[in-house]
Amino acid sequence: MNILIALAFVAILGSLALAGYFMLREGRDGKPRGDKMMRALALRVALSVLLFGMIMLSYLLGWIQPTGVPLGK
Image (cartoon, rainbow, N blue to C red):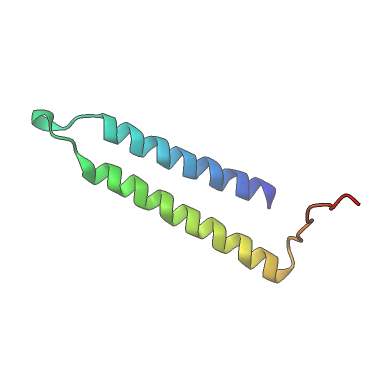
């Protein structure tokens, strides 16, 4: 499960970097091409929602358990 979460984070960061690349790259006649950037950002949002849903499903199925933060007494 840890590897899956780590891969999802890498994919999310990769999609964000790709969107930044498309934002900085100019299209024809100096006009920015926002269609690829918007798709990359939409993919990032979809991956984030999917990751959150998988974490919640894993918790509900008992595959992962919360460890909590120890409260020093």
